[in-house]
Image (tube, rainbow over all chains, first blue to last red; front, side, top):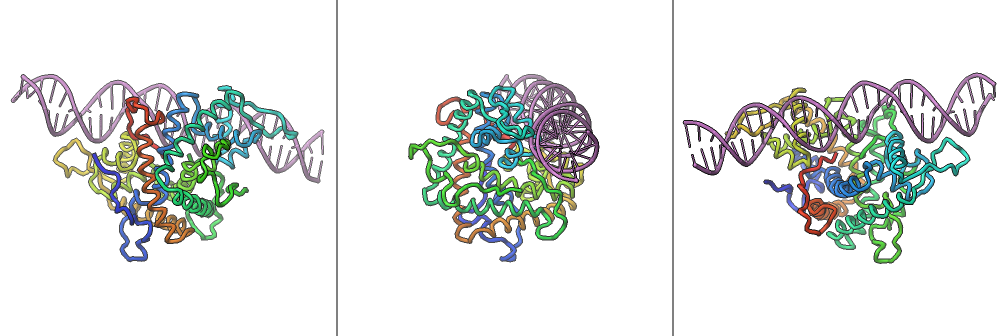
Length: 190
Length: 190
DNA sequence: AGATATGATTGCAAAATGCAATCGTTTAGC
DNA sequence: GCTAAACGATTGCATTTTGCAATCATATCT
């Protein structure tokens, strides 16, 4: 076997960018902030998926889509893309899957009939409730590991990081360089 | 385009678990901690991928694998699985890809010849250096959004969350229930 | 009306994934 | 020493997911 944490507790490379210290040591995946965030989130998402996948028979995209529909009944596919960081194809397929399984339906509430206008069915709401109960429980188990103060701090930090990451994504890897900035468009993510 | 932050800055649902307040309002994807972590990490990973994908021609798994090899030259495939949260098949294929592209090679340094013993080639190191330079730059752009104190705080919080998430994953969605705990095995993630 | 724009969907090729079967090597039992 | 079991790694193949062009339907513009 093997440990998983080969970093000293207080100092993980986060606080000292190497460039400043002149040390310039190799990048460590395990200490790289995005990877640390990724690992935590993926573990939880996997656990949640292990529940709703077999139980309700839909994919991760479909769950994300369902969660968005639940919060904004009558959304269009495009709005789901924007809210969920999914591309239009995933969303279209997620909706199709949800509709086929009877968890959602296309409603024609809008005047503009190009828009999809999706909402959850009765069983869709039931599924959503079950899944989000588990999601909440997992969230509580997770946040139970830190104090209320830390949680509040984390909240504010994540808000900042979220904004920063949006900026980074918008600029692309060429950074500030004015390079036409690629066609852009929502990358899938997941 | 569109904002991406439709939450009130200070209070995102994180600090008040609803159950306590009796409010019991619907789960909001955008405020759910694992999703918030996920979104940040995915944006950065996408940007990084948009660089090394076209430039060096390998996949996300291959990059993760490369980063691990770089830090522990001579690792076996199994060790890469454990360190990188990848399953043995992804790793095997990632190694194959890296070897085919000339970025890594199998070395027979070990006495036990069942183990792979991978290390980076010259061009592998060059690629790694280039990619990790960008990775570091992105990390700095990201962490530049918060103060040093916040960063230190974040570091310690994430360590706790990482441990908690490992526990949650190990227990599975059935939570504490003694249910044989599923075969487990590293889910891929990515 | 015809041309153009926009939201959504579909078809199909390419890539990623999951899993059983397999190969080569080492270890344990006899 | 020889055989069987264990182990790490790899491969083949079916399934799923993804990316993208093409398409359909509706709405808007001239």
